[in-house]
Amino acid sequence: MTPDPVDLGSFHERTLGPAEAREYLEAPITPAERDEVLALVRWFRRRYPTPAERLAYVRRVYARWQRTLGIGAGR
Image 1: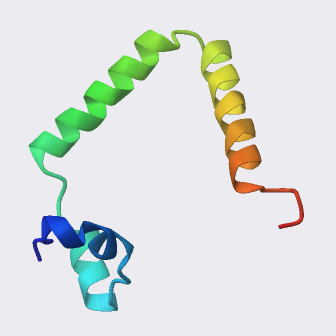
Image 2: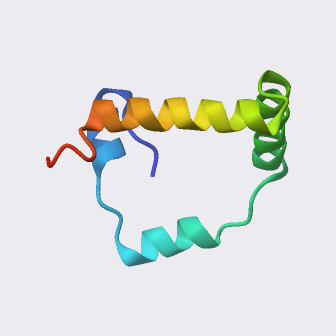
Image 3: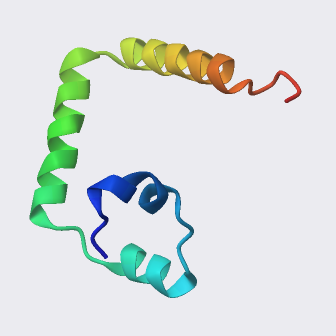
């Protein structure tokens, strides 16, 4: 199913049926997808070369996520 560029928002927000979700989840990872993930991992490891830097990044992002979404604020 290819979305119409004008209707991209509703395409993105749609609910998948069980068959469509299963089809998506059971599809094999393509070489291009694998290469993209590995490139992102390499970038992340260069940007945050030590475990301490990676943990600090995750803590910052998690705190920002909690503030932005109101997690833990009783909402």
